[in-house]
Image 1 (cartoon, rainbow, N blue to C red):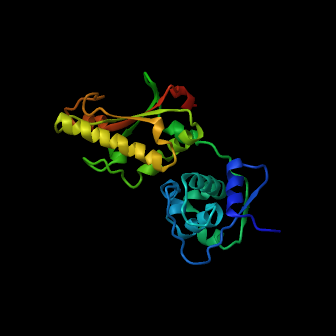
Image 2: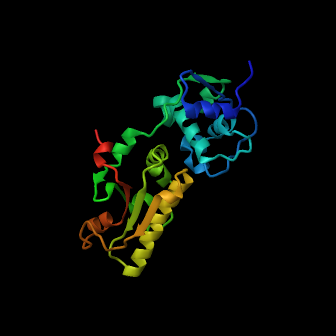
Image 3: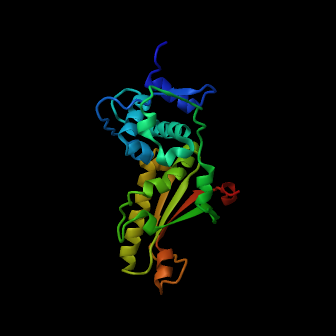
Length: 248
């Protein structure tokens, strides 16, 4: 029987067929280096482990050039989640990678409803709003995303890829320290960094509206550290969507 090509494996993943899929989990051969816009999209278990990278290259790199697209990365993530199950965080590549293949249920696809509930959406005037504090996403007084920020944004990116009609407003906010001009510019850079992260994860740039609101819309007093911490935030609004769709 002829071995399935990576292109066919990707098609099987995206279509979620009714039959079980067999993935190539071998760990032999030289170290694999991956590149391309999809690499930041890969789960850390795939991106940061040599056998995880080999799993992606063997099964999802359609033309063998080691350039991973966001679509290929998303397919690899879904397959790995199905493969690892509850053991995802401590997946034993050394044990599992020795087999030439492994039969698993097909990836179900779709967005992670539990993760979306975890964002704590509230109903706003323009749609469903979720808030991320700046210390979760950024270094102090910087618009550079922290290393773990993509993992925080990943479930929302998956939802947006699966719901291409949803448009998004990203608004940055600061506390009142510094000048109003500095705060407005910083909040805009931070909002744009979040948008760029979604772009890297395969969500079309044109779907976003980005605003820097600086210190103009505080949600807590700027007279103490706790209040200022609440005011330093990025709000993501799913325009026209109901917050109760992400509850229960």
